Image 1 (cartoon, helix red, strand yellow):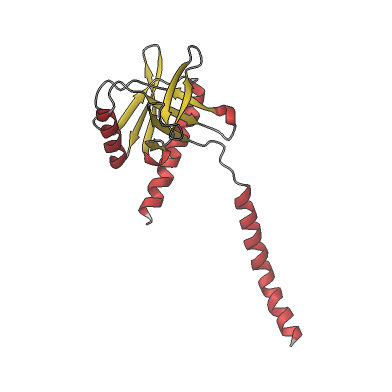
Image 2 (cartoon, rainbow, N blue to C red):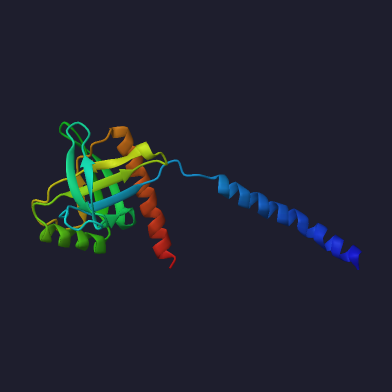
Length: 177
């Protein structure tokens, strides 16, 4: 009886080795770029545990007190683009409808406040920072946010590509549910 069990295991051995090799190979596959986005709204500093101070802009730093909970993240993005503009470039981020409504709601409630934009485009901590803090001048109807980042063109190319890859993955995941 031991002989039959040994022969049966020998038949399964190549299949088990193939599955193990495929599983190990998938663990070594690593995305080079990540696309993290956090958009926070400026807040009063009186709520100690719900707010924090951040510094935006490297050449002329500005301190902004923000709510610790983001109002939008990379999970809300449907697409991102790098736009050429006079004197530089800008980032355009398009959000899904519910996130666009959230953006519209916050910008209509908090005119004169800042939207703080955090981005990270690789695993390295130094490849992430607060990019911008545009002042809300009017209600932002629609699902698009455009801003000029405090970053290099190359950094933003990586970030925009990663955001678009994330958006495609999120769309596939939502479609399969």
